Length: 226
Image (cartoon, rainbow, N blue to C red; front, top):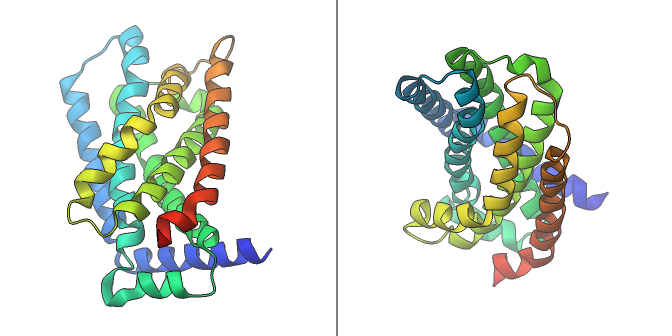
């Protein structure tokens, strides 16, 4: 219980800090909507083409948005040596990492739940027919992105080129999860259910989240203190 209390304290601190300025949130939402708008001009797909393209385009936007949010996860505490104070505090490394991940996850979900309806309008796809399955896939894939991204954000926080290094490290590792999310989302936004072989992709998402969450929590002390 102490672990979750400490994690929620860190998450609440980060979310309060972000919602006071809305600096990252506003920039990420604006960026995501602009990219979706550009995609809508670049492609005029038929119904079948929309099904093929929609999952990839949507998760491309989410991947870019995620990196913008993840870059600020630990960098937010760099001024006045706040990050060093957090690491030296009685809060355990796994609790600190888990709290940061929860905060990043919450911000990313907020951006995604704004972008999906906008995407539905631009592409005229019946995504509301599979609302809860889309929510499930979005939550699973976003958690995986935030776990991996938060871990690498901690590793690159002191680099001057962390904005460049973070996506270079995160995107290759996220390929299995992103591929599963793209396959599932492409079907769901067209109003069709997950069936048959698509359940294997859903199992891949769940397995990815469990494995990388366990690995990150096990190695976070080495990452933070190093």
